[in-house]
Length: 194
Image (cartoon, rainbow, N blue to C red; front, side, top):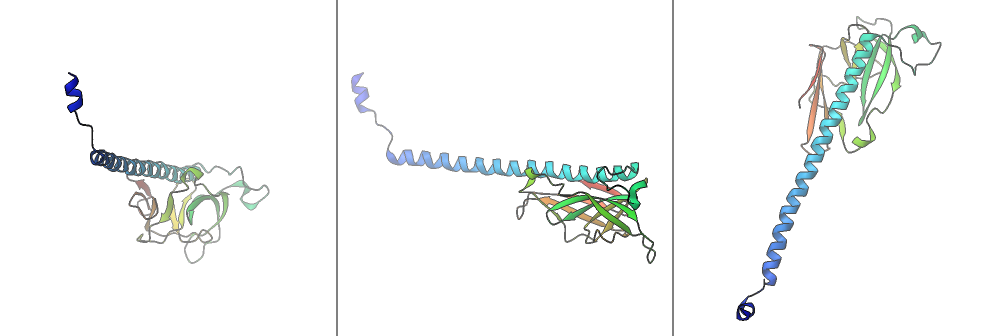
């Protein structure tokens, strides 16, 4: 038996390097997969949050609730005519709005900020942008009181009726990890794909 011990060979340095290289390749593939999984999970969670905030604005408009943060003794004190979500840069905000005079057949609104910077800090790597291929260059969406009907707008200072749609893209910069929220003023629907 002792003769067998002396005849056994150990592993060579080259074999050891090959095994280490295989482990490194498999490990790097695993890390890449984990990074992509994390990005996808964050995108889905951020998309649900944006969608939920848009639906919250619609529900506030349908219920004609008053803002708790609205200044007292204003013209708007008795009633809010609508709520809007505006997309600004890489963030979005909630506005409460009152109807202004009708100008050239379009119903315009004056809007004031109720809650700015709605994007949570945990989504700092996530981008929220308006898709440039949208039919209408929308800066946001306004929901009218009681009905919850939507109007798209290009500028929160001049909200007017536009029968069109726009897409909000939630993603990670230049990667292909993205989800799209479709805001359709024609059918009065908001949707996103899972």
